[in-house]
Image (cartoon, rainbow, N blue to C red):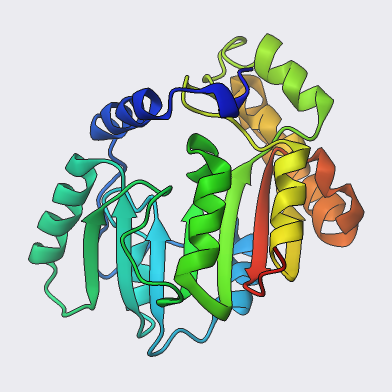
Length: 261
């Protein structure tokens, strides 16, 4: 895997724009707001960390067509969604115009590495599966800059702290009927980049999410009893034994913005 320090960032940003211009996620269905995280137990943990949201300014980085922004708006927040894809922002604005209810949401096109906002403008920042596609150090600096001291940041990112997962990405994923887990602009976080998160912020809780759940990418394991069994094992490993979160592919970072560096 290439070292992201040596990547042509402009070229990769153009690839990201092209990719997401052509892979917009499903549009939100008004009255049925999408959850922040697709696994209920983790959704509850993230909610407990972020709530209440009434009257707060919230930024979502990588908002796509804006479907998660409505979660925050429905809870009384003033929401801004940014995305590198111009088509995604255009679609998000079109959807908002069709929304039968009033909501305080605006959308702007912007890369994560240079956010067009004042220092400390937001109370909350949320980003899921986005920053590992960016110049991570620059994006992390921007996250800390635009969120006020004491504000909340939630990042969910894929990581490569487990050598078995690194091996699986190279040798298994994309085979045995499973879908590919990467594209040429995706660089899951290294252990060093996770350490950078811990060093930069005063309070960081790291939650592992998936190890055995990754096997559900293979069609054979999508039938009972495997989904329930693998989910139960992962929930035990990562919610009861937090010290094992290095085994997880995706990790959730619950951050209180108290800059240390």
